[in-house]
Image (cartoon, rainbow, N blue to C red; front, top):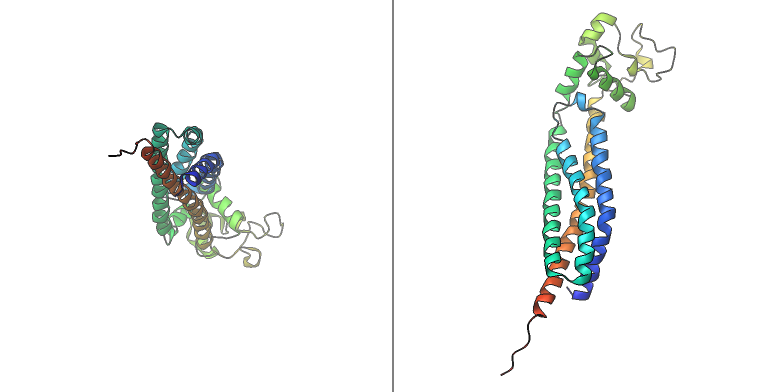
Length: 241
């Protein structure tokens, strides 16, 4: 890579570190907020690992952007070496977050049913599990795990002979009451498939963003190498016989 091109490329990468840091901070926050809405329903909390890594990366990137700009303009070997090391560590952290995302993505498939059934069995309309179940059923317009009949085997149904009001297609409708089962007024689809799709979509979105920034880091490392090698070669004077 030509040194001039490498220097321009590295300077540009340094400048967009702030934007990239802000973007990754948003992605990490979005993941935590999205999964946090249903944390009481999920027994596996490992999804927060990639989110925490991504937020940590974003904080470091704000600082690294300043170091990168100064080192690139001055062609400081020490600064560029430090910049290369930080970029490499961030690149490795992004790959780690990507690996954890892949691992958790595979665990989502078929792994939600036990957690959701446990939440339904603890439902009493007031505890944290109940709030999570109601939020999920309202958001995804669903009822039960596979369908609304899953409620028939719960303690809530045995006491009330009906499903929670959050199963209603129209929550504010006076026709959908808690007095009896009215399938025509209920969201009869189960929540497992819809929650699984939601979690998969969140992870996919995060993975695409992380891959895009990882590619930028790769070109940054190549640019640092090109500038450092040019500076190293220019430090030697030719010897003539």
